Length: 552
Image (cartoon, rainbow, N blue to C red):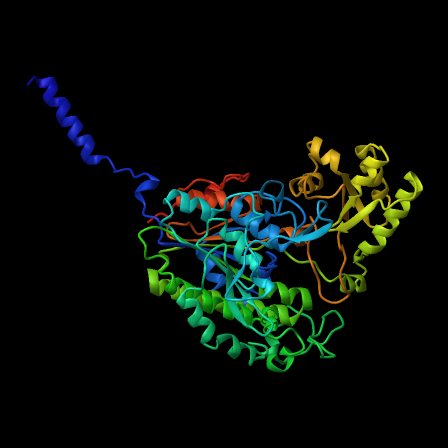
């Protein structure tokens, strides 16, 4: 051996000795379970508004130890429950995933169609129409679908929510199961034949354990002393909708007494106890399905719906809403403690977001001289019909108005040998001239043009030619179609679009991100963490800062 070769070997050995071993992301074990939490109607500012009343182990644990995107918005309209759940888990918008609203008008059948309805399936665990649900309208894969593809079907994916669409759309088309709550006289968790022939024994046992009956016999009172609720209005005010047959919306609420006037067990959806029942069922699912015990990553899609019902009925400034979030915070704390017990502290992945926000109650805003008000779609449809009659002659020109969409009678257009595109543009121009309409878009232009304005892009990303109207219009900020009590959502404005996104778990850095992000960025971020393929119609991008491992 030459002196040169000997020296080279020595240098190589020293180099190897001093060199740090590098690892690729694939060297890091994946968590046994990922839980995607959707809090229905959670505005981003609820994190800060109610911060002082949160426990150390709920939202505060998520914010302090996870990655938090504070400037994340929905990048399309309408901001409804069905489209929101679909967007979070598909990483794309209604233009690509097919869920353009909670329900939409179908020209072919001249009727409204619900986003989860499926006449070809039967209920499992219920004989009512509430069981005839499936994801067959969903046109894109979800995070769960891609997880199952990656593991050759070995991963389990389960969806759970009080609402059928909140369970079905996040879980995706290939999920092992989706379960939702059927109220009325039943008070049970059910599914459909899309997933199974009969309920697993653990679900049957849960339905028989009396939990729903127990919560329906409870009294809803403030969890904390009333002086803690300084972030909300006085308990008795004119901007909240009381339960039937109450005259005033004031604590305490005897759920058992109210049950017979408010849909039987359906009332559980509208009180915080519905979220408690949801968590109980989710923990039973983790045990019953042996999630996280299968040597592959399993996924639970968990949607808390009661916050939406409470928000609709009482508005964003009510003590009822604040109490619902304080109680939900304790539910999340309990979930953390149970996951720590089952899988080890932080040995899992959680991501939390919301399907939409919620608007301030217009009647309350009007009292403060803010620009806000109410809208009548029926009146607007009548005026549109009168305009079309004056322009094109007598005829049933407008078939439907729904979700701020006007649907023209295309059969009549063809019979009259008229040009549809010209009529769409004429009607959209008329719509823009109406009071409290800020912009209107013709279907032909949404199909052909590439909008660059923020409002135009949001409308276009929520538009699907086969399901959307001939004209889509947008109201001014602060205006809505609703009662003068409570509130709703659906607009392209920040009060409806800005929602939290928090990623939490093993190797997720503790960070706060103020950069602009879209709801479609959630799915690719989660998929990047799991090192699986993106949903097949994904249009978002991973948030890179969320994926840098914590330094030890």
